Figure 1 (tube, helix red, strand yellow):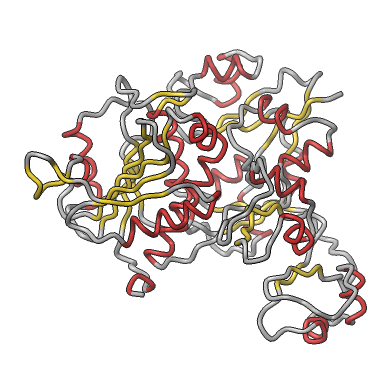
Figure 2 (cartoon, one colour; figure 1 turned 180 degrees about the vertical axis):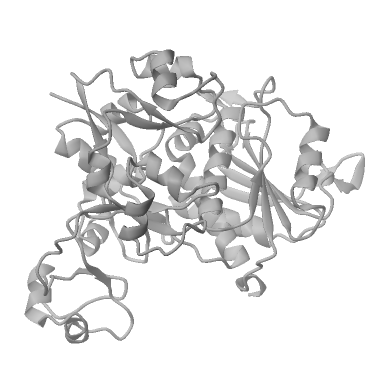
Length: 460
């Protein structure tokens, strides 16, 4: 297929629709301008981490005229065919599912690829099409497609907010749909896709059930349901499931075509019986895609535990060291770095003991609509305490900015740092609480966690 070659000259411009005084569509607790901003920021951060050139038209709650929006799009990387424009929206009108409208000047490949990936999340209804201006059918109906020059522009409608089922789906799964767009761009542009840190994905195959998948992956059906916000056990072929990585499984192997228990055992310097015992196998039959736990043939690793940090745009060793209360030299030594130069998407090991010695407090990432007053109220502290702890000289915040928040509820909570393999379900079980309680306490809108993220945990 012609889109399998990496188009390294391509850039992406993300347009979160509406904003400021223009709320867009509303319904069932959703305000379009806020939801599409969350979706857009997610896609922006993921593409950044994967090294794809990307710009976002607005990163906060800002009123933008149609003319200004088009100007920003065309000035981001020029009026060129190698610029992809993603204009994110929600819909109304009593319909259901996701839709992608593509420009008259473009073919349907990108639109179709985006919807193919969205459909894999939970088999939603999808439709892609072009729409013409009634008064002049040679022109696109939507100005964001009509006036954006030679770019490859698509308008993505993620669902109908006036449909209660769609609205609930969007509120619970919007990050999964944003990730589907990232996967679609990976397929379309040919860049190397990796799932978010701490996650793997499983594609449902013919004959699969939640039970068989849980057995294959070594997790429970309850964990699969909770991690994917599933309300039924019905699965569709091609559906994508997020899989929590088990922390205790320090070494796993995914069975490939031509593998046998003997060849795998030989590869890891263990015996076939060791493999069968570790994986509760009663026969020598294995399947392509099956994940096997590999017992260690060496003594346990004496090195300290660590988290994996993925370098983002604007990062430096100094900034990362400050964030995790360590030093530049410690990070360089732990990662065998000979210079201070970092690359977007580069993975760094951060010693966990450095994080656990951090001053009491939680790291909070500023979101759309946040203010120092609202953050202080949420965490039972004051604006002055936050400013003093972060050396702030004004009350102005920027989306994505990280703040250290004093834990003034320490008598009722403790702070937990997310590690590889963690998910909300496993953390809730460990601390005898619930997923909903964790989400409410930490103001989480999805079940997605990132390694190194800090959570407030209620103490009993």
